[in-house]
Length: 87
Image (cartoon, rainbow, N blue to C red):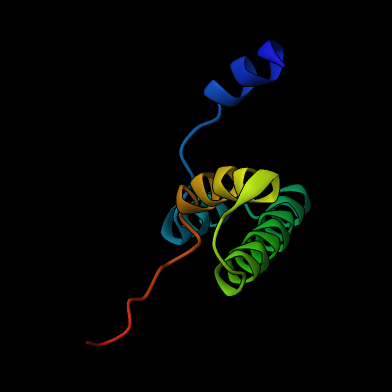
């Protein structure tokens, strides 16, 4: 467990869509394009997890602890833009 925590601390902040477009503009090789599609696929999974978490009830018990940890990770994802409803 300690080893995985160390690996997590070395993960960089998420790149915004503009940064990804700049990377693509500098290098449009097949490998870079494949990686960009993989990023898009993984961001889609993160968005689905975000929607699922928001649709479930309160964070209670062991499932609540797991969901709370997921919420922390999802809140750090630049690809998820939270839009607050008008009041």
